[in-house]
Amino acid sequence: MPFKKPVQKYSASINTVELGTGDKKIAIGGESVLPFYTFDGEIANAPKVGIEISDLGMAEELPGLRAYYDGAESVADIAKKAASMEGVDFVCLKFAGADPNGENKPVEDCVAVAKEVAEAIDLPLVIEGCKNAEKDAALFEKVADALQGKNVLFLSAKEENYKAVGAAVGLAYGQKVGGESSVDINLAKQLNVLVTQLGVSSQNIVMNLGTAAAGYGFEYVVSTMDRVKAAALAQNDAMLQMPIIAPIASDCWGVKEAVVSEEEVPEWGPVDERGICMEITTAVSCLASGANAVILKHPESVKTVSRLIKELI
Image 1: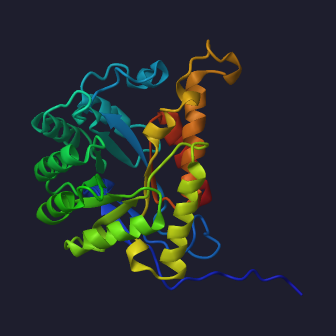
Image 2: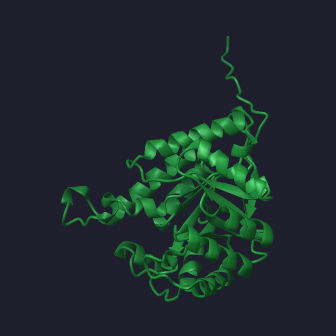
Image 3: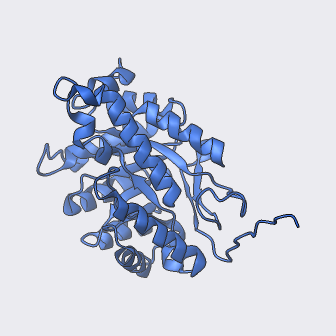
């Protein structure tokens, strides 16, 4: 008797969220099957890959990464080169320079950079803050205003600032809101409930469940993604049906395996190759656990992960 594989069908599905405008806009989410389970059903929107750039430029990056942006002087120039690289679906502009404990760039300066970047690229744009809740709230409001009509995703609204971010980004200026929690399914759900209670549509929310580089408490990240995706599909939990984005670039390029020189640990091999391997390994694991989009930094990582997605979807 021939074997007939059973098909796992879910009545629920992940929300579809669109980013960007025009021909280059993208959609994330929308699936009603587990990650890459194309044998159970169609996955209309393949996972997307973004590339992260910083308002600080390339001065603090590793030499191998700086080489890819040779000749790019302004942040807008860097964004234009980033957007042209193979496999890139969107550009993520991180405002590391806004950090009050760092350069503490004024909000007005950050808004000017955001506008220059938005005008330099035709891909969707994601804005990532400096991780300071108060500064991010002020920054996101002004940038969301300046980029009205661009359909931008802002990362992230947290428990400390979700009211200000949700009201400005999601309600006043009609942009997409990224809700960031701390690797816990209950915290993720609670934050989604709070943001929707403000009046932000669940169709305009993306989840950042918290990230880590592979090997650094990473099992908590992927297990949380697994649980969220299972609850969204199998239990039809509407407050967990938002797409998941994983901004892993900074995590991967901040661990010792990616930054310690070859002279210090020659048995580890070239530093650039280690960082790329760390980024690819982390990204693929996140995608396999339910991430609908990942944000990377190295062009080789972006190209490799993008090709892998195309092979599996």
